[in-house]
Length: 95
Length: 251
Figure 1 (cartoon, rainbow over the protein chains, first blue to last red):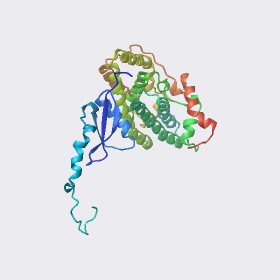
Figure 2: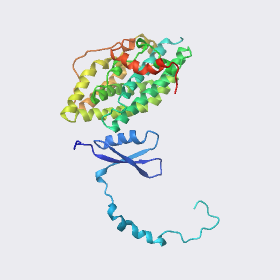
Figure 3: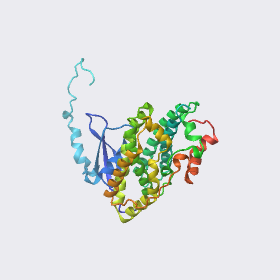
Figure 4: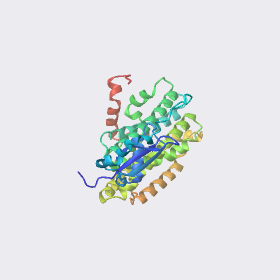
């Protein structure tokens, strides 16, 4: 396998005005301009978006899966942080 | 037929789109990378979509009750009026991209001018296609610049493609009595003005790509008159096989 492979890019697409850009996948491209064009061709063929962000994957810092316990479990026991102790009045809809 | 010149004119645009779309489609599953494979087949589908609208209009003008499939699939080689450029083999990626770039650099100003046509069907196809074409030209221009201003090998391959394809570019601006008739009626743009815009785009992009415009002025044509290169028969045998083997099939 060539070591000169093009860098990997993460692709984020906003499906319509007012919504957030959401991660949809990744692709390879030699630079940002072509990464945007490739993202357009690969991820918006069926009118999925009105705006695209690409970020070189190497620039993303992620949590370590081995540290998931320390990172995330402590919040599991703090049920009082969730608004589950309120009685929802009868007249309230869409809750 | 009421308007033979217009029928011929519409077929030219449709045939250029169909044959180039068919050529690009040959890359499907064979692209240098997955992303570019999809990009090229996207462009192919845009071109074939444009040809469908144009064949529908041509069939209406012909008035013999044909549909777009019959015009696309059931004519003989000398009845296709596409230019020789679009039937040239894909070659390497540089050849495909340069062929597409020369074509797109023509098609964008051509469609922009055709949008002003008083022939409503032509103006409508041009208005829909101009956005697609703007993207095609952007994409191929980016590639020409990257290949020309890239490695020694990519530069050399891009320059070889230019040197080979240049002889076919003059035919983009081929005009005969069909054009003269329609231009006199104010229905279609003069290609001389479009040539100026084409040359400006080509000069700018090739210059940024550090690539040279060839100095020879070989000019190959014949496609608009139905005289094709040896490649055309092979394209048609692929393209027409299903309709010839199973007449009137649909799916």
